[in-house]
Image (cartoon, rainbow, N blue to C red):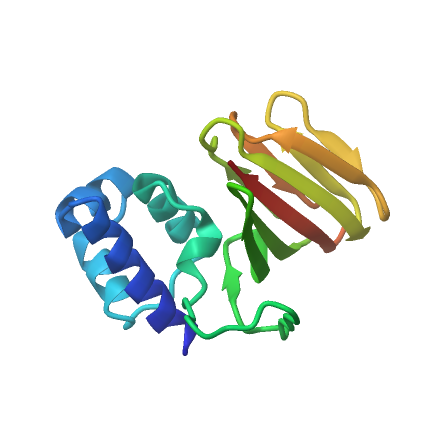
Length: 183
């Protein structure tokens, strides 16, 4: 199923599950009601920033909005092809590669690209949400906004995402793996 349709269906399901109107969700997310309506109907491509704001308002992980549920899936082998669930923002592109739910926890694994000179500030997540990042190429400035770390190829960081945090590529494009761990 096409990504815009999957996102639209999942947005609407989450909004209805919370008993919220289009107007209320749009207001809380800081977007127009028409924009939300077009997203829910699959007529508009979402940006990373818009989907992140909506996921926060609807209290769902970002990855939940990107994957169509399949009742007959076999989880013994999972293959994710590049471009299947790619989401672009002003500075960052993410692609959901896998989502795993086990033992009361959810893991979402993303391919992360931060464009040269790009800087993205991610808002705080709910308590106990952990971000883990492994840099494959480039230099990534990442972590809590108050004390980010500079990481190079092969470096790794783990932090609790309960405060605003940044992703920045000061010297060139960065390719990394991002694992989001939700309680």
